[in-house]
Length: 134
Image (cartoon, rainbow, N blue to C red):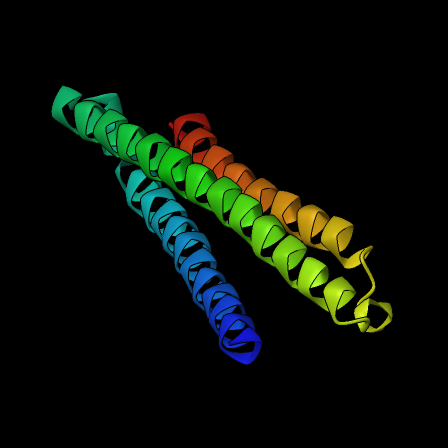
C-alpha cells in the first residue's frame, strides 16, 4: 500500500508540474501576442478611438489571464509543498528521509516566485510599451 501511495504522490507532482508549465507558457504567449498586437495598433489609435478601445480590451485580457496564471502558480506551489511534505513524512516513517534534502522546499518556493515574476513582468511590458509608443 505504501508503494501505491508513493506512486500516487509522485504522479500528482508530475501533473502539477505540467499544469504549471501550461499556466506559464499560456500567460507569456498571451503577453507577447498582446504586445505585438497593441504595438501594431498604437499609431492608428492616435486618431481612431475604436483602436484605443481594442487596445484597452487587450489590456483587460492580459490582466485577467495573468491573475489566473498567478493564482494557478500559487496553488501549484501550495500543492507541491503539501505533496512533498507528505513524501518527507513517509520517508521519515521508513527511515529513508536522509536521502531527501528538505531545503529543496525552499528552492521550489523561490522557483515559483521567479515564474510569477516572469509572468508579471512580461504582462507589465505588454501593457506599457504600446502606450508609450502611442
